Length: 137
Length: 222
Image (tube, rainbow over all chains, first blue to last red; front, side, top):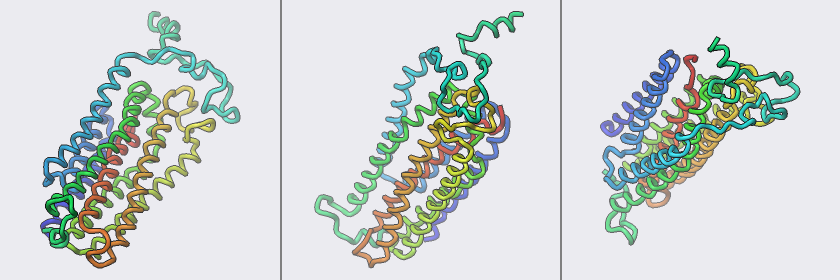
């Protein structure tokens, strides 16, 4: 009994340590590495759960293939969606500058002061003229 | 090893008890694969919006409760340990022990839902729920940080869908714990507990990804 329970306890301890590492590193200013670290830790935690708790470590290949098929289909979904969304920018339309449009979903007339002009955002081509002037001068 | 289950005769369509157990686990794995595609489109939407509204995303993520999110992750990981222990106990024929462990895992699941409910309550009070009243206090005017509202639409959709799955897991665990109180041939067997565990661990794994995606973005500033 003890021999079957020990790997489960060790896995649980490892999961809690990884959680602490994830929460701790999230507060360090590492830039883009923050995302890489937190997602890498999430993948390691999921592998631990899948291999030990869900017993893929000792499962027949049929079950491992079923697990991998789900991940494969999800990767396919992301890849095929990216052929559209990753290859074109957002359309420039008035509703994307909410400050310029009067009734806005999410702005309450009681608490929000009157609408002011929005400072131009980088990448907002319709408002590039003044900022370009600043940089040029 | 399976002292309890291996001695039972298999159902007519299976040649052996082991084959029947494998078929049960296979069914749950196929269901989990389809569940992955149920959560998947929300995650694809997350990726798209995060790449297009990086500032709004970090500003919105800082409005979530870092401490309660971390505590909840630990609660769910611990419930998964209890669920795995319950599977082992049930396979070894220790039905009372398995029932207690299942009930304990369900109790931790309820604790998770209670903490999550408290978070929702605080977020409603902070006016972080998307809609006409959306007005996050910390980031100034929401007009200046586009994408914050979109983050909270995904936040409530993803955590809500996860909470729904966990609720189903809690109800089934409690039902199975009650069934295990009956003597061996009646009630659920070890395979049933093991298959429920697969579902529970999947819901746990979903949260393992939701935690960094929803709570940890932009915590270091910038």
